[in-house]
Image 1: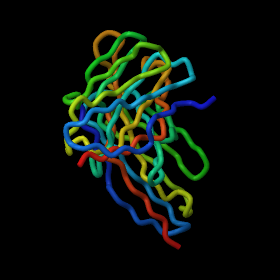
Image 2 (image 1 turned 45 degrees about the vertical axis):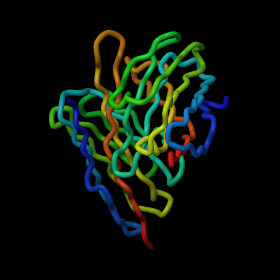
Image 3 (image 1 turned 180 degrees about the vertical axis):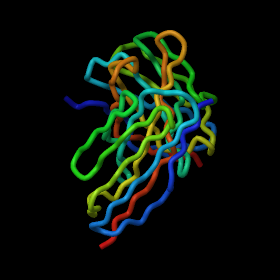
Length: 114
Length: 114
């Protein structure tokens, strides 16, 4: 099993450009999450999904959109990138949070917006 | 709103000595997770603590949860260089319906010196 994978690993964008980050998991997990990690801030939840076709806002959703068209994939979109979105983005998945199940994290995407 | 505090934020440890780090949270929760992150890497699950009084041990690390005090501790026995990393605690918050989330602390960076 590959677990949770993310594409791309690195990306540099100019202000105003758009991009999509792809997360894929092969563990048949229902729940998927997108976080951003900034120095000294820990991880902050951007959006999450509790199943195929569902999405919900997390703590810091502004400037991002998500889609979960297939159970195994969770896409994070930046429509018009801003320097404040420079961060490391992590995708995670879990079987459920209403149980003992922890979240499994992908390797991360390092995004720089100039 | 749930706040998760970790302290200290940075700890320089001497090889062979014992240390304890702390995770405090502000509202009721009966579930807490510890993760480890090596520099430039993803997060790895260490412990899942599911109830008051829960204690888990893995090698030189032992985690415990006191839900009444809203406190989790991570005890390090005889620190070794391999334990140098950033350690995050995350507290489970049930939301409405089937939704729920983890709130992460800012992390504690441990550095073990000879």
